[in-house]
Image 1 (cartoon, helix red, strand yellow):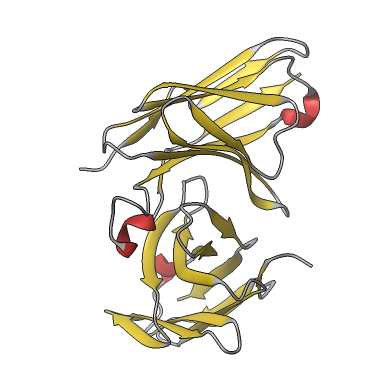
Image 2: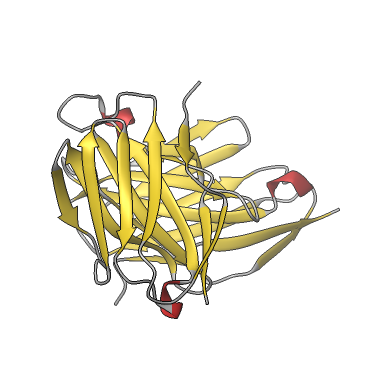
Length: 118
Length: 111
């Protein structure tokens, strides 16, 4: 069974703290993604990675960085958390279009981490 | 203008009715189209994908694609209360693994 796991379901941090959110997938997917989801703003892409050590900025990368040292693990880092980063964070993974069929583009999502920064 | 637009909702239909969810996209190079369902407090899960113009049916769900009009829709026949959720339209450019998501349409099916 396909599985994407995230390190925490709920997290409360203080302003200025460094925050690590981790995501692990067991499907040998090449692509991994970090989104945040806020009411009225939909699902917004923060960063994605198409291979180990490779990353590309999404629509809202400011204030975030990522790390992908192993294929199955993709970490999102908030260098100095701020209250406007309070949100639901969703990780997803998918096959690469270059290795899969078209039906492989679908993304599998983790359960999400609800982060509150106070 | 947002790249992927969905009807704003919320949409409410009685049990047993047809629910129609619509999505338009701006990039003519888009090749892959997905519908995800997201229950309240849960993460999105794929319910349909479509690549070719026309209809694609899977049980009570039908996805319709019209590339000339840059329009994709999802019909849910015999709607059930368990279909109550937010439906997200997602669009991929050709050969791109990255999806652009719409804001979602919230559907409520009333018993």
